[in-house]
Length: 127
Image (tube, one colour):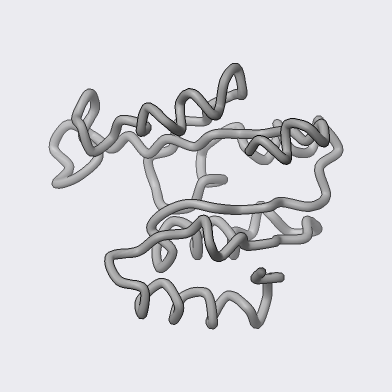
């Protein structure tokens, strides 16, 4: 994020907040909170709240990116096999070049993350 900020890129944080009856990412739960180091790195960047794996689904992400003329997305996050994959392959990202920063993605195991990244490499630039 430091490099992106220096280069004047639009940085967008994504926070997954599910419903209160969900088994994970419940509102105001530790699991739904953005880590304090990430909050600090985001600074005043916009944070989009999502409720599904796909960060574009029923959020303002697509509108924000298109309004800012974004054609290349550099995606990081967790879980690689779930949220990163669904966001990278979202139909709402059509026409945008998707780049996955592999070292900044996480999953329960490295093998699972590597498997997801390998699958994404067919349609995304994984570096």
